[in-house]
Amino acid sequence: MPLPRRNDPSTIFRNLDWPTVAIYLIMVFAGMVSIYAASYDFDNASMLSAAEFSGKQLRWIGLSFGLGLVLLLVDARMYETYAYPIYICIVILLAVTPFLAEDTKGSYSWIKFGPMSLQPAEFAKFATALALAKLFSSYHFDLNSRWTNYVKALAIIFIPIVLILLQNETGSALVFLSLFFVLYREGMSGLVLFAALFAVVIFVVAIKYTQTFILGIPTGEFIVFIMIMTVMTGMAAIYSRRLETGRNLVFWFAGAGLVEYILTLCGVPVPGLPVSIGLIVIACVYIAFEAIKYHRPKLFITVGTAIAAIVFLFSVNFAFGKLQPHQRLRIEVALGIVEDLRNAGYNVNQSKIAIGSGGFLGKGFLNGTQTKLKYVPEQHTDFIFCTIGEEEGFVGTMIVTLLFIGLILRVIAIGERQPTTFGRVYAYCVASYFIFHFCINIGMVIGLCPVIGIPLPFFSYGGSSLWGFTILLFILLKIDAARKSVLAY
Image (cartoon, rainbow, N blue to C red):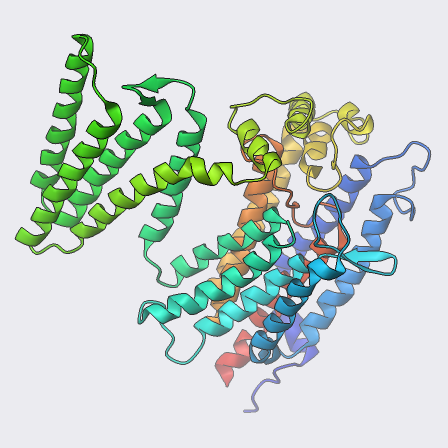
């Protein structure tokens, strides 16, 4: 019986994941319609007009379809074979971009090619995904077998981050942090993700609650100390495998807290900072003793977590002060510390008004007043979701949400059925990018996240974004379509 041809077009299209293609087509055309609604001009009302953003987007869509077809016709083995050369080329392009790009709202990330501009950071996503997948598919590569493997993986992720930060494009750089979910899928300890989440919570709490004081320290710091004690108690109970360890810590922290409260009621001043640190230090000594006595070396992770959390807490204000003024202001507005409806908070405030005014069914296509009167800046790019919310209402936003959830779940399913490590890791890279963009963009539009300027995939206007996500998705579709021939060989 003859083996199937690896690059037979009929085989490729027969094995193509058509549900994913259908979702992609629905999203890009729905995006074009949304862009038309967001940038509608009463004097030039044709959706296909070259003067309209929707008309320009249609040209990008046509080119994307051609690009997707080419990617499907390329031998799937080529993506793995040339993963590192592609990555190196993109890294070089990122490095020279600040010297070639013009200043665009303070960012040096767009390179002009005649009448059009492209953003290399968008293409770095698929290149980084390919390189990471290539690394994990290396012979006998195991993330946890040696620490140098972590260094290699992190180097692939952080090199684009550093180069994009040099372009003053913070939002695009942060996207690559989503690849830590891929590392977790491939064996990285969940403690790393927990540490990242804990650090974010400490940062938010420490920054947000600085105006009031408890026991002479800012309320935010006091809350963080309580959180550290709680985490220590839980981790110690788990790693010691003894309920007594957790119970003793609960009695220690609760008893000390009760004594502090009684002394405060009696008018005795209690220095909150040294007392809180002292309680944690004594608890760390107790946990270390338990680790040695019962041969539980993992208990030292609890001690390390507590020390790292305290150090991070005291570095928050320093790190926050090193941010650019507009970055600090955006974070303060997002956290509700500062209300700046005329400047940093203007976009988000107008966006929330637009979404809220849409109600359940929306005002109707081209009937959005916030959109038509141009109250929301960048409403055809980063803030496209508010146009959908105003004109299509809750129903429209839910349809868009379900489309993204369907696409992400489909990509994960494709990843799980891959016969090779390369295909699986690449699929999870694609899923991670989509999850980050979807969650952060919508969170940004509704005021849950700071405005960091990242697009909504397939909906926001822009050729670089559309091409970047099309390349990401269609490389995956090609790898998936060729999986049966891989098994046959």
